[in-house]
Length: 285
Image 1 (tube, rainbow, N blue to C red):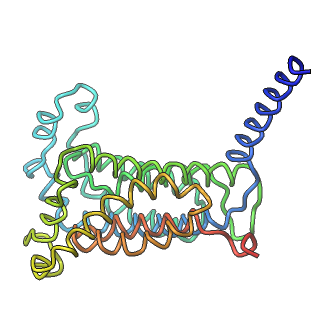
Image 2: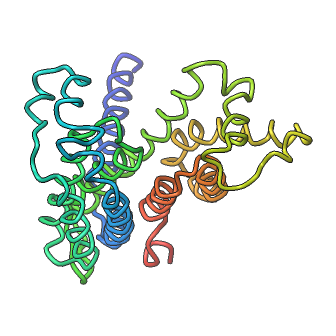
């Protein structure tokens, strides 16, 4: 009996793993979360492109601070040199902003997602040293949404579920890797020095946090929270405790957005988390 039952148990375990894998990636889903993600990504992309417009000539013009020759020398690779030229990069942010604005309406959403992605990558490759964390999250969002079903009516199929799952996994990976990178880079996040530097750095701070120097317990709590949430959130957001992760993401993104002065990235991160992981009303019911 034991000789025959062991293979049967192994076969049953493999069947459960296969079924779970298929359900995780290919279960049918609707496009309502994808519509929310398109609005979040489109609005963030619009702000991202408009932020380029005031100084794009000073940065990317032939005589600018980051001319093609200067960036090519800094990049130093043949592939990078192929991507660098003196093309009309001043119009790229305006084109991207127009595409992002129309993308939010849902008209030709797949094609416009591809156009937004090309504009973001054009700016990133042209001036990689100016690439912000926002572009690292916008690019995969635009890429996945270029394949996702869109429309005003609810569409429920495996493609919608697959695209949403890709976005969820990618977002969790970004959180987890960013947290591990913080903790693995140096001891600054372990001893609180990094958090204090962000709080006390005058040129970039939006709020005067100097009073926290008299309350070290708040510095300790802020350090632990800022260091722990990306790791724990990235590891647990795909588990049944995701409501706790979504709840904790609000104070985390508000705190980090203010002390780093990168409101756009943390607003995009917060919007992506809630749009991708919160249940649709029909699912909640």
